[in-house]
Length: 215
Image (cartoon, rainbow, N blue to C red; front, side):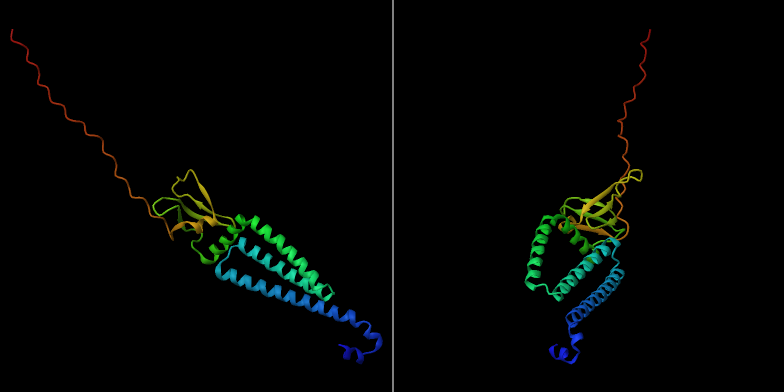
């Protein structure tokens, strides 16, 4: 850099301390925009391939976008002369606050992570009939999967009659802690019960007509 300054005029050397950081910041911004574009394309391809719902694609895109923005801001501040010690102190402080918030909201975030596993591992899909068993020898929640979001799996109870629609909302963490029975088409219909026969009435003895005494 000093050799390059010696080759340029004196009036231009005064602007080098401004031009070089400006060019570096512009390159950082261009690279961050290109990285954001590539990650969005990759997320869209993965969502189309694995058939991710919109409720999952939008949070993932938002998380990636904010990570890129945060990294870009840190690099720009470093180019502007902000000390790495100050950046590390600020980052560690934000990380500590984030860790506390993470553990405070773990019950909600665990449902979110289990939703990611459901969309990737696919233990069941929309339209499947499942039964979440509390134990192998005990019945559990049973129905058709009508919705899967970041917190709940919604089942439509098919044991209810058509006049009364019953919906069950099961937390996603509950699914990974229990046994899941799955039917890919229609659930097995219960065996028809034989009609009950009327109780047999014991036949009464026929009474002979009483003979009137002879006069």
